[in-house]
Image (cartoon, rainbow, N blue to C red; front, side, top):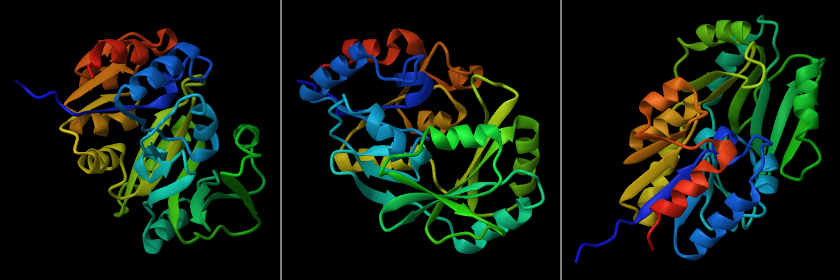
Length: 278
């Protein structure tokens, strides 16, 4: 008798598992909990931090570690504990900050201090940055640190983050490309296409690397991935099967094994319900 594959299912959050209200629907939560109770190996891989993921996933009984900040962090939601942290070589992060200091957009620097994620930022900040921070304040999982004057790079820096007009971010992205020791992702804001985000991580940081390590630890012989944006493509490459919701950007669809129903119709949950056989 043929043995069933031990499959690890990994889903991105925004635009994939989350609905149009950026939430886990009741149907998706109930479906995931039922499947996990029946032995499905399931977790998430997202650019988000614990500050928002803990709340978003509170109705899902996630048993496996979550892959956060595009693979820079592996986090145990049940125990609120970092299992691994990928941080910059200080010389590399300092070069990036120095190279971009005259670009007119101040970065936010994410770093771990005493097992808590901190975000250093310069004042003044624009309206979008202010709104971005306000939506993420008030949790024990992230502390914002105001820096007056020249920005220095703290130890254990895991990400350098810029937000602003996409064309200006593209200029910054081009400036840092020659700098060795980093991996960067530039993408549009889905609601305001003229705006964008630039995430800069230590070299080797990716969802793919973190997923591969987790699959090895679990003894999984198949990875099935779901995603909708550019930073999901590396995990599509290492997955045996990959699925993009129909609302995904076109580049991601080209890398997917198949297109499934959109995030607004619980596409991932419906697929898992049909695909998982315990």
